[in-house]
Image 1 (cartoon, helix red, strand yellow):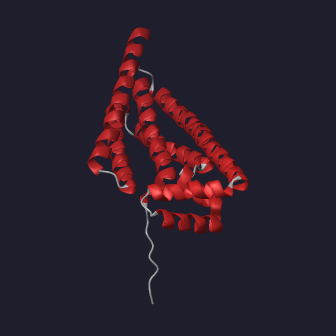
Image 2: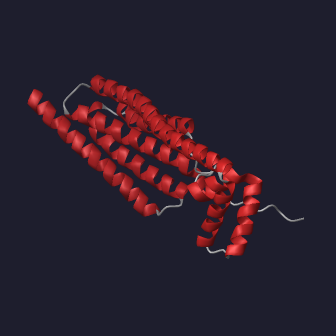
Image 3: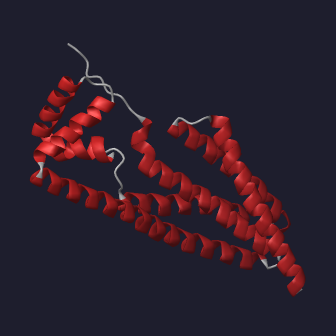
Length: 232
């Protein structure tokens, strides 16, 4: 008995993977940067923790709202294109069939075969064929606003909780160094996990995420130190 062949393509993960990596990265970077910046300005430990918690809540809500609005706009564009294509199929089906056949000819099919393929696909699912081959819209990569918003908010919260937990657990004198060091480890780990999930080069992804996170924390800590000196 023949076994059913099933392929797992990483492109199917694009929607949630992008939102999850972006959210977790922002959670680690923004919260650790806020903690370091506030700590560098000589604020009390309690003040540092309050700022961290506020940053976690505000950041998660901002990520969810921003991701939803952004992906919803993409979804609206997709739906508008599909509505226009649906109207064109109803008004000029023959022209749309020739257009689809032309696409297949450009991809390497003989004109006669391209015509047969276009006819059969349009008989099966005309809108689906045009959505996929003319507009580049498919069920695999279509925009999913709610999924993206939930993934972003959840991953941001998870990422933000890491440096916040370190700040809450370590003694006051060790807070700055512990948060900075552990956050770099967290970012490197995130870069490696994202590369593995998406099939990207491991080293390049890890270095990229860690470098930009370190730069953000360094700049924020410098501003906090400067602000603390000026105010003090």
